[in-house]
Length: 373
Image 1 (cartoon, rainbow, N blue to C red):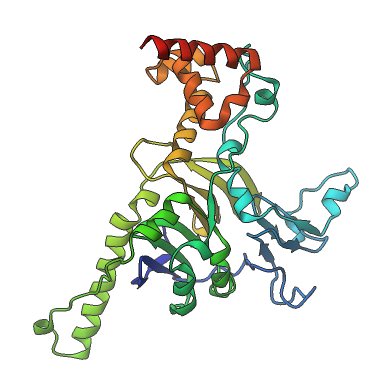
Image 2: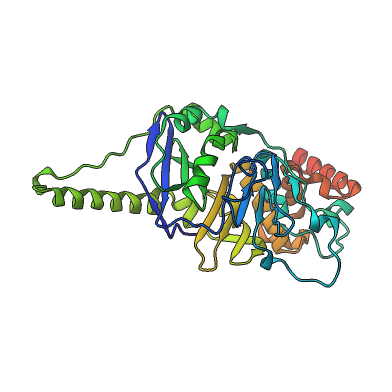
C-alpha cells in the first residue's frame, strides 16, 4: 500500500491526538463521496458520476440508470455504460435506488470473519454453522470517536488544509485510522463525522493513558537563509523530511505490511477491495477497504486498527484457513497438540464452530490435563 499521489503535511497536535493531513496532487473528479446522502434532495447535478458513502447506518440513494456496489458502507453510482448487459429482465434488487447500510461500528465486526473462507472439506469436528457461515462475528468493545479523549476537540479546532483529501489519526502516536477521499469537498463533508467512527479498546486506552504527544516542529538553519528563495528552499526541504519521516517511520505499520485483498468489486476504472494483514506476531494490524483507479492510485481508503485480542483471532482463523480447517495440520503448524489448539479456538469465542459433543470432549480432556499438571 502506498500514498502515491498524496502529500503528507505537518500534523497538528491536541493533547494525545495527532491529525496528519493528506493532500492530493490532483483531485479525482470521476468518483465522489458524501457522508449524509446526496446534497439537495434528489439533485445529482453536482455529482455526475457520483458516489455516496454512508459510514454510520444512513441511507444511500442512486438513480436507476447506474450501478451500485455496496460493501461495508460504500455504494457507488457510475455511468450507465458500466452496467453489465444481460438479456434477462432486471430484478427488483437491480432496479432499487435506495439502500440502508449497517452502522460503521457493526460493519467492523464483520471484517475478520468475512475475509476467511469456510471449510471446504466436511471434517467431522465442525458444526453445520462452520460450513455455512464460517467464524461468527465477535462483539468486541468499541468506542465512538466521542469517547476517545481529545478527538472531538481536535477535529473541531484543527485547520483543514487547502486540497486536503484525507487524514491519519494518531492517538499517543499510535496510528488509529487512515481516511482518504477522492476530492477535497468530500473530505470536508466527511470530516465532522469522524467522531462517529468506531475505535478499538487499544486506542481508547491510549487516549486515556497518554495525555500529551510531542509537537514535532521543523528547525531551520538561520545561518543558511539570506533571501526569500533560501527560506522557500528550506521550508520545502523540511516538508520533504517530514513526509519521508512520517511514511517511513510513523505510518510504517500500515504502509509496510503485506495484505491479503478479498472481494474485488469492479466499477469501470475503479476497484473496491477489502484487505487484512498476514497477522505477523508483534506487528500492527490494520484492516479496511480501499478503492483504487486503473493506475493503482488510491482514491478511497478507510482503516481500522485491531487490538491484540482481535489479532490473535485473526492468526487462528488464518492458520485454520491455510490448513483447510484440518485440526491436526493446523495444530502442527502452530507447534501445538490438537486439544491445546481447540482450547485456543474456544477461548477466542469460536467454540460454537465445533459440534457440541466434540467441544465437550476436548474441554473435558483439557481439564483433565490441567489437573494432572
